[in-house]
Image (cartoon, rainbow, N blue to C red; front, side):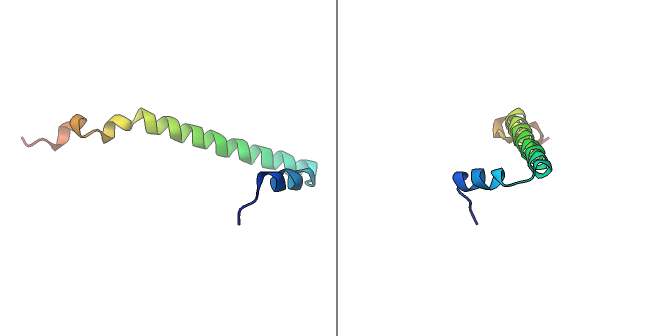
Length: 59
């Protein structure tokens, strides 16, 4: 089930304060994880480059 942004905004206004704070924390954790994963992907992208694979050469 997919909720439109406007539906989510309306639902948020009906949440009790403590639930809204918990939701905010969960959203921030999720965004932080996504950002770290994106950074890790770019940091290790050279590992996927076949020209950089020094261990696949025959000895």
